[in-house]
Every structure is written in C-alpha cells, then in structure tokens.
Image 1 (cartoon, rainbow, N blue to C red):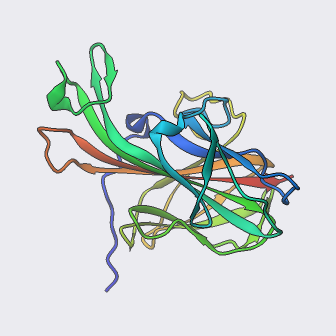
Image 2: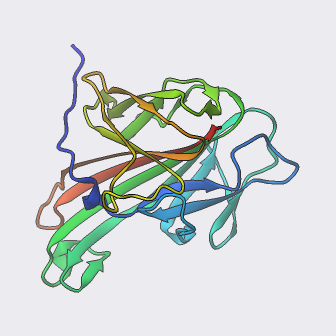
Length: 241
C-alpha cells in the first residue's frame, strides 16, 4: 500500500528568506553564454541576490556551472531545447534572538527564541520544446506533469509533490514577478493544497516569470541544538502571454 505523508507544515513566514534561480532570460538560446544569478529574499522578482559563497553549487542538466563573478554563473553555449537549472544553497542555522537573527544553532547564542535549520534547493526551466521534469527524489520534491515549454498564460500547471519519495499532503504557493501583496508580506496570489496523492493543479493567470514554492518542516533531531528542520524547494518558469 502506498504511504501518504502529511507532515506538519509550519507557517510559511517561519522559513523567512529563500533562494530562487534568476537566469538572464528563459527563451531560445542566443550566441552568448547564459548568465545565471541566484535571487534571495521573500519578494520574488526583486534585484536581491545571494552571494555565491552561500551557494553550494549550480548545475545545468546535472553539469556544474563555473562562476563568472561574485554573483553570477555562466552556461556554455546552448542549443535548441529545454534545460534544467538546479541550485543548492548551503544548509544552515538561523536563530531568532531579541537582538536579531544569528546564523548559529540556538545553543550557541544568548536568549534564543526560535531556531531553524534550512535545506533549500532551487530550480528553473529554460528554453523551448518538450521535456519531462522532476526535481528528483532527495528531500522535498516537485514533479511537473506538463511537458510542453513554455507554458501559455491561463494554462494550468499540474504538479506532484513528494517528500523522501512519498506523496506529500501540503500547501503549494505561486507568485509572479512584480506581484504586490495586499495581504501581508507572505501572502501569495495562488495557493492550493495537494490531494492524498500529492497532486495539485495551479492556474497561472498571466504571462511573465512565476515562482512555485513548497516548504515543510520537521522537528530537529536534537532540540537542544535547534527547533525545526526546514525544507524549501522553488521552481521558476516563464509563462508566455
């Protein structure tokens, strides 16, 4: 019998900042290498960037990319087709204290209020054509059931969410670049819960860059060190008008 997971989903605000993939463009290849940066924060589409010293690695179709400067990776020249960009942010602690957040476990700071240890993977699909896509089976994963890229505005995107290979009942959110929240800084224009099979369908009602985000949390193995073990996975796509 298939095992269905229903982990305790902490409020999205608990996870604070997250990383996302920020390629220079999403369309057909040009005669120049593609420059790729890593967005950072909780406002998708802003110019906030993550220093690459805080990134473990970025890959193009499983091949590691070379750094071009402090904030930028570069791909080789690309041919026609659809490619997967994958990034892994260095996992780490963030402990809230009366004096602000510290990148330390709670047993190494004074007056800790809340500690999270976060694992954050981030992806983007670039190019045009047919491709099946899954972030893999290592942790919190997104499988996209659509196969034609780019999507067209008002097309529904079908997803399957899993955790350590098992379907996960959880919330999936999406936001487009330039969205101005009127419901608080952690409000999203699209939010939907998966079913018992981990599947969900989202309606992306406009063209432009979209970020899809899944986040979930478990108790940290040693609560004297930290409170929560957080997982965040993001996927960025471009939707045609």
